[in-house]
Amino acid sequence: MTDTEIKKGLAGVTVDYTAISKVNPDTNSLLYRGYPVHELAATQPFEAVAYLLWHGELPSETQLAQLRATERERRALTDDVKAAIDLLPVEAHPMDEVRTAVSVIGAADLAGIGNVMDAVGTPEENLDRSIRLFAALPAIVAYGQRRRRGQDAVAARDDLDYAANFLWMTFGEEADPVVVDAFNRSMILYAEHSFNASTFTARVIASTLSDLYSAVTGAVGALKGPLHGGANEAVLHIFDEIGSADRVTTWLDDALARKRKIMGFGHRVYKRGDSRVPTMKAALDSLVAHYDRPDVLALYDALESEFVGRKGIYPNLDYPSGPAYNLIGFDTLTFTPLFVAARITGWTAHIMEQQASNALIRPLSAYNGSDERHIEGYVPDSATAAAADRPEEAAG
Ligand SMILES: CC(=O)SCCNC(=O)CCNC(=O)[C@H](O)C(C)(C)COP(=O)(O)OP(=O)(O)OC[C@H]1O[C@@H](n2cnc3c(N)ncnc32)[C@H](O)[C@@H]1OP(=O)(O)O
Ligand SMILES: O=C([O-])CC(=O)C(=O)O
Image (cartoon, rainbow, N blue to C red):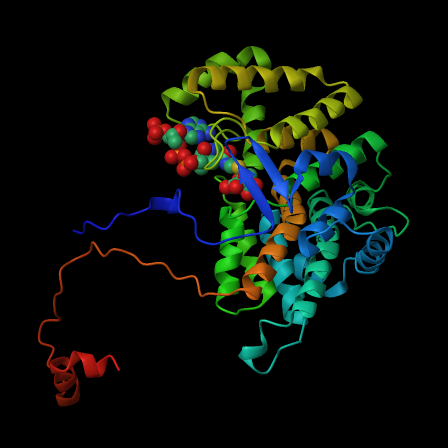
């Protein structure tokens, strides 16, 4: 064994600088490029926050109009992506559809083909790729839900902004402004969160000088897990299991006796509450009032107060966003793909930041396997035996 200190899960390890966001668990705050996220959620369209994450500044009116025009041009579900999704079983998890769709878009981008040294691309190419994925994902996520319901794709509308068009493509009808506003806020809150597991995955892949699409594909895989983005889906499964507020105590007694994790609670960095929860909870409250569903709020409050009271572990963003997406009408399986559509902004900002100041990410491990041993009967040839006698030369 070794006396090297192991930082399991990289907990508490600071691996690099980032200028994109600051998560501060002491003040329970989250800044995107210096702006508190709740101020952005209250005042900005998601497109402006995407611009902020990529460029470091909020857009002028002209810059926002340019980004919106490009996003609108690239919103449609393209034939190749639709065909690739249609090849998958209709029961496939939508995160697998999204991962596949990103891969298809990446394979169709032929810039840098021919020499692997060009895969990484220029900053201009990577900003363009970021906008391409940002614009394409809503149609992919919307079509996934419609396909599972046996419905056709709904064509994008270029007279609607990002959030309203996303809801239009999913449901085929214009959403109420209350719903659009709550959805827009959720996208902003989900957009970015420093070196979380999926963003770190993207940065690891980018650090090898692989291409942006590969880094995003890996990030989608990391986000799928229930300890990370998959928790918003898992929260709704828990709500369905519990059923109603009056059943919370018995359900929790049983779940804790069986040492189950209560999804939507706890966080690696925040230990006294997630900075984004109050803003998302306010969005959930507006949806509860809009849809007249006080039963949802009763269950939400009952589980939160019982679990926090017993364990002192607080809700994370996935706790209010799960029931909010359910009220809007998204299928439970669609929740984590919605997170992808939002986080594509943060992931791509981090990929470009990694590329701008790259070092291959390759930590060390401490070996705790078998002592050296040998294959019975193996006789090295003379060159191998000679090299074994001169290990420093063999290592080159
Ligand atoms: C957008 C996001 O990705 S936010 C995170 C979404 N994920 C979830 O909601 C999944 C549920 N939560 C969790 O599993 C954890 O809180 C994590 C993975 C998010 C953070 O975990 P870590 O910082 O590694 O803390 P860890 O898992 O070691 O938990 C510390 C203790 O609290 C307990 N704990 C933490 N979260 C929970 C929970 N949700 N339910 C029950 N117990 C919990 C652990 O069992 C552990 O107890 P122990 O010390 O008795 O073993
Ligand atoms: O920061 C984390 O570990 C997880 C999280 O909340 C996020 O990615 O939004």
